[in-house]
Length: 157
Image: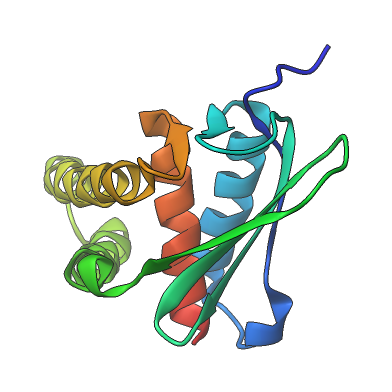
């Protein structure tokens, strides 16, 4: 039995093209798998779930296409990327440091960088919850995974 308040399927707009670094491709695959395995998502004003979701970026906006799996009208909304830009920039910078640290640093140094990375990731997830609150209710784990996918889409631009 599928819980109704959830994303059942998620895809990224392939029209964006661009190849991802292996680390980002790995993050994309993990975020999608984890999101499908466990998430909470419910449209505030719209049909109930479960949902099929497609994410894309167009003209400085994250576009979220939500289609109830049972049929019905799709809901499409956009979030301005401006409020996310600093967090995305910080996240990529700390990820670069983290991937570099894995090759050259001690476990305690890697752990310190990873804690900072998780902190920035949480900032992005909190911003995602805040920006979506009038459109969809999501939990923090769902927000973290959506923020990861936003970063992947941003990297493909």
